[in-house]
Every structure is written in C-alpha cells, then in structure tokens.
Length: 258
Image (cartoon, rainbow, N blue to C red; front, side):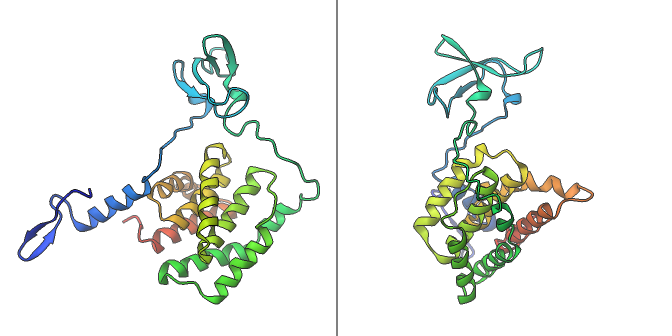
C-alpha cells in the first residue's frame, strides 16, 4: 500500500479505488502484522495424519516430525514420527507441557492479592485517559508505580498467575513510558500465548495486549475468545469485566463495530 499513489481530482487528492478511511484501516491492519510471523498452534485433537510439526520443548526441541496416528479409532494420543526411527507421543512435547516452575509454598495467597479491583480498574481507567489525551496524570503515574512496587518482582508459579501479573505490569509500563521494560514484557506475553489454554487467562492476555498496542491482530484474537461469552445467560463477573474492557478499548481506539 505504500506504493499506491494518490490521484488529483478537483484540486483534491485521494487514493484510487478506496477511500482514505479504508486506506487508514488497511495501514492499521498491516502495521499490526509488521515483523510478525503468524504461528498456528492447533490442539492435539485437530492434528491430522500427515501434518508436519516442529517440536518446541523437551528432549526433541527443534526436530521436525510427521503425525502418523491421530485421535480416534481407539487411539487416545497423537503420535508423531521423528527422523524415521522412533515414535513419540506428541502430547508430551507440546509447547509449555513440561515447563518447570519452582513452587513457592508461601505464595498461595497471591491469587487473592492479584484480584485487586482497585489496581486493575484504576489502570484500565488510566489507559482510557491516556488514549484520550496522550498524557498521564500524576495520580495515574502514582498508581502505575504502586503496581510496579507490588508486583514487579513477584515470582509467578502458574500461567494463571503470570497472566494476572503481566496484565497489570504491561499496563503500568505503558502508562509510565518505560519502553524497554514494555517491549521486553510484550515479547514474553506473545511467546507464552500458544501455551495458555485457559479461556479467561488467554482473554486477559489478549485484551491487555490489544489495549496497550492497538494491534488489529490482538483485537481479532481477543474478540474470538470474548464474543461467545456475550450469549451466555449468566456470565461470571470476570467475564463481564473482560467484555466491558474490550468494548472500552474498541471505543477508545476508534475500532467500534458499526
């Protein structure tokens, strides 16, 4: 699209074939995929015989394999052939399957501490003011620094805890303009996405990524997870919160569905 010339008509210039708004949307989508390598990580029950995969964790990391047995017909696990010499249950080498985490027996209260409505809602509202004005107030700055003091050095034991912590920290880094820490954590969150299977944890990551990056990719992925909840008769409070936050970001970032 960068090479599409504008044309003149009646003293005005415009893009041929599409409106300026359409070109703006095209650029927004293209920028979201800039320097991205889309990766599809299917669930094991979606793999079919003949699919080729690359092992990403465990003893066989980096090796390519071909699916030779798929679920069904009496077979429970997916089996893949590596280098034509062995059979390996793919279920045992999925991304994140054998991630080792040091357990902290004193940290069981962390879940409760991470469900802090004041900090979570405060950061969300602060991001709304930031998107509206491009600046951060002293009060919002103090709140972001409080989040860093409280959670910046916290050891996360599980993916659920990581998602909660990273969501708070990424928003805080965004508000404080700490670009290096923001980029580092952004890369960490992107890399863990394929391993996060819990729907609400995945939604929390995606909604936060969208709100902090204005990426059309994360917006689409967030809506794919969150939108089905709108049809539930009595969605949980946590789901309602994510629905509202996603709708807020669509409004603040001018991507509301017409």
